Image (cartoon, rainbow, N blue to C red; front, side, top):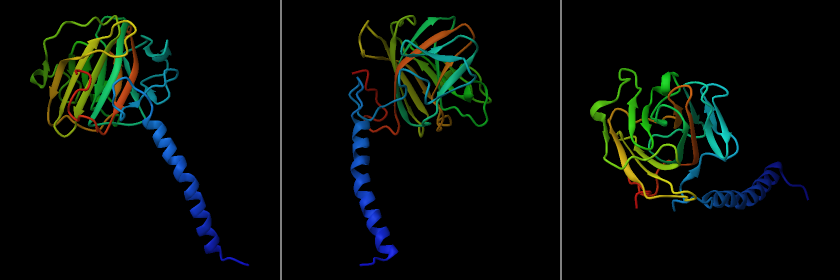
Length: 240
């Protein structure tokens, strides 16, 4: 019996959908099941521990992967940003240490790549102790009252520390909490070290790691991102 092309096409579409649906569901479940040590199933791993896939460097050769960590090679001032997703409201958790250098480690939020300017025209947080800078055009300064450093026991930069940065694009509030990691520990109980507030600052932009100048060798590992924030918006999950 002959069937019309329309009937055959409809049947093919139905079979394809039936096959694809379980596959899509399985993929979604696999992603949700990816483990992280923070008890938040919405966190997505940003780094595979082996390659710089998903990251864009300011210049070739400035960054590499050493011992399962993103490693600053110390060749020049520069940055590397996560190119899979930009974020305005987010939770960003990572481990950081400085192998050698004369300036604190630095990360950049709420910047832009269009146009491309120094430090991505971003707001700079300095983990793990809370230094800071504002690289936006018309600012390029310490930020004054925009930033508030909170008292805490100084965290050594030469050993691994854990930091959590939470940001709300609509309010222009970003906060960071950090703690020293004991040898072999996956997590630690963090203390808030730095707050930033400027309602005009929040925007969707790249999340970036920065080295302030040549000769600095910083390392980052266990990088996780949640955006949009589903679990405990505007609240730390590492301070409990």
